[in-house]
Length: 60
Image (cartoon, rainbow, N blue to C red; front, side, top):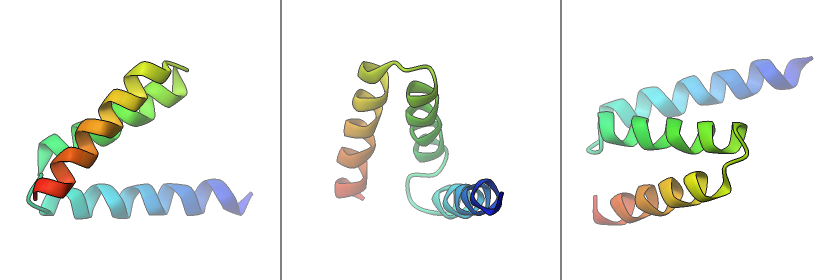
């Protein structure tokens, strides 16, 4: 029962820190695209968004 609450708190923390970082809204959108791709079992969408997110993080 504690695990969903911990995951939600980590998600909120990571989204707020990404919104304040250099990536801003684009980082949040890519992060949500990864989550939606995993939830919808669309591996290509999740992997593509993760690659773009990683590329942007290395450039920041």
